[in-house]
Length: 391
Ligand code: DHB
Image 1 (cartoon, rainbow, N blue to C red):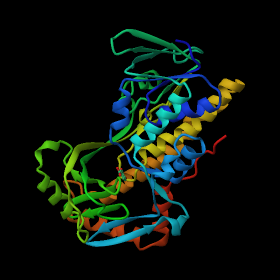
Image 2: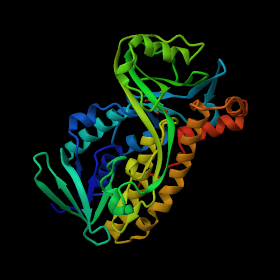
Image 3: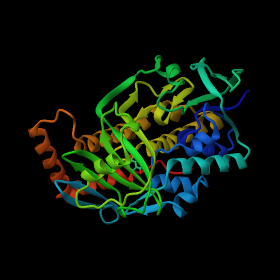
C-alpha cells in the first residue's frame, strides 16, 4: 500500500489526526491492532477540556461531545473532612465536558467511515523502516499474520503507551523520561444515580478517591489502591466501604458494580518525538497519571500541532513546522506532566508517608484552596491552556 500519511493507532490521536488531514485533502491510511468493537467499548477517560470540545465540534468530528456530553463549570476538592469548590466559570470563564473517550472514538470512526477513510482494524504494526528517508515504511501484519507494507511520505506513531513505532524514533522501545508511583486507581462503573453533580477529588487519611459520573444511571468512581491489587479480590460491599470512607460528608448512592479495573500510573515523555519523517503523538509520545484528566486532551493538542506541520510539509513542501514539532509540542507536554504529577502528589497518600508529609500536604491543599490565585491556577490548567487554532 502507498499513501501520504501512515497512521499507526486508531485512538483519539490517530483518528482525530486522520479526520483533520481528510479535511485538508491529504490521503492517509490508519491501522490498529484492535477490533472496532474493542475500540468503541473500552472504558477510558471522561473529561474534555473546553478547547478539545471546540476543535472536535468545529471540525465536525463530534457534535455529540457538546450535545450529549455534560458541561461542568467546576470541580470539588475534599480534604480534612471539608469540601471546597473550584468555580471554573467564575475564575477563568471556561468549562470542561464530561464525555467518555470511547464515545469520541465512536463518533470519529463513524465520520471517517462515512468519508471513505481507509481504516484497518485487526492490523498490527510490527516495525517502521527507513524513518530518516523520504519514504518511510510501516511493516504490519493482519489478523491472519499476512504481511502488509505501507509506504508513506510520513509515518505517525499514535499507537499508545506500548508503541511499536517509538523504537524507530528514539532508538529503543522504552527510551524516555519517566517516573512511577507507589499507588494505582481502582476504577468501578456502577448502576446508580449520581452521588454528586460535579466531580469530587478527595484526599482522605485512607487515601484518594474520585467521584465521577457517566450518565443519570451510570457512575464512574475510583479509589487509590496498591498497584498490585487484584480487581476480583474485593466484594461489592468492600468496594463501597472503601469508596465511602474516602468521601466523608457525601453519601454515595450505591448500585450494582458491573465493571472494575486497576489502572497503574506512570509519567513518561519519550526522549525524542521526531526522527526524519516519523513522529510520535498521544500516549506513544507521553503518558500522564490520570489525576487531572490530561491524557486525551494532550493527545488532541499534539494533533493540532502536527496536523498543521504536515499540511505545510505535504502541500507546500515546507518542513520547518515539522522540524519544530517536538519543541512546540513539548512546551505543553511538560506543563501537563507537571500538572498531572502535582495533582497526583497533592491528592494521594503515598504508602510510606510521614506525619510531616501528611500535614504538609494538607497545608498545600489549604494554600491552593484559600487563594484565588491558587484556585485560578487549577482552573486554568484543568480547563486547558490555549490550543493551536483550527486552520
Ligand atoms: C475521569 C478520569 C480522570 O482521570 C479524571 O481526572 C476525571 C474524570 C473519569 O473517568 O470520569
